Length: 208
Image (cartoon, rainbow, N blue to C red):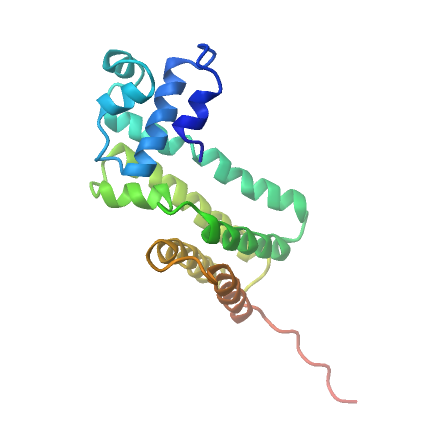
């Protein structure tokens, strides 16, 4: 995730639009301090603008929060295209590639963890604009897992997709609460065991 400091240091020469500066500042502050703890005044100050300009681009803080989360969807979606390009026509290899990617991610993600999970905790109201973005993001990734599990002809692909999805969600929380030491290795081992449990082993050749 780009922090406001990194993003805004690229050019205070006005090449970055006020909207981009506001979003960069909000993304950094929301992630580091929590959404409810950050007011629009702090965001405007970090973006080197004012509240009037902020509200011109984002009608409310809720809409700014939703956009902060929405901007992180596309990088996550690209992973599936990258896996398909790396292992064309091989859903099983793509699934293992996803497992390795997530193992690296959960072991190296910043200490604040998943921004979507954090936002979901802060906004329990299902009708909040942020909740709709969170649900869209999580549902999409769970569906992609199901697609790969089905294409790989694994048994009970929907259940396996749920198991793998819950594994990564739990690993992200574990990284924050118990640390990352050995987490990637355990994640891979558990994921591989889940996949193996849903694999139909070829029948042994009959004795001659």
